[in-house]
Length: 154
Image (cartoon, rainbow, N blue to C red):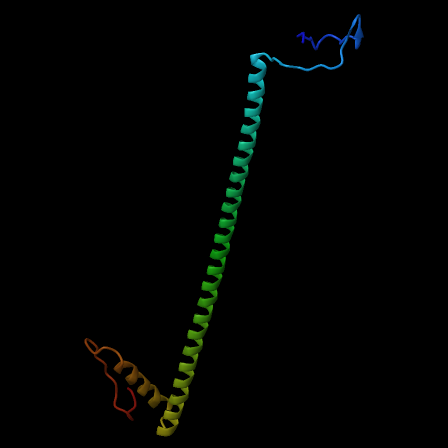
């Protein structure tokens, strides 16, 4: 078997050239320059680096989306909490106002009944209210002068 080198840059001779006829051709070795293999390796490395960086970019994008969703959720929670506190304050204040109104209405009703039952005039009733109010105050340093019940104030 004879070895021959074929230059791929030159045209192949027709199958029959002179007295020799080629039936088949087998390549036993293909040689490339060393920088060609290095170039192929570098291209593959760059492609792998590109894929890796794309994955890292996707991870960063997902993390930022999670951060955005977390912030939106925290804002929603803060809004719900503030709304609930506002509504609770309104309900509590309304209940306290209603309780005060009921207490004052009940006191007024009982004072009216007391005044009618004891047949007091407005002046007598006012004097009673003043005495009752003063009696609920601390007596440490209080001095009060009032006329006796049934006497006209001077």
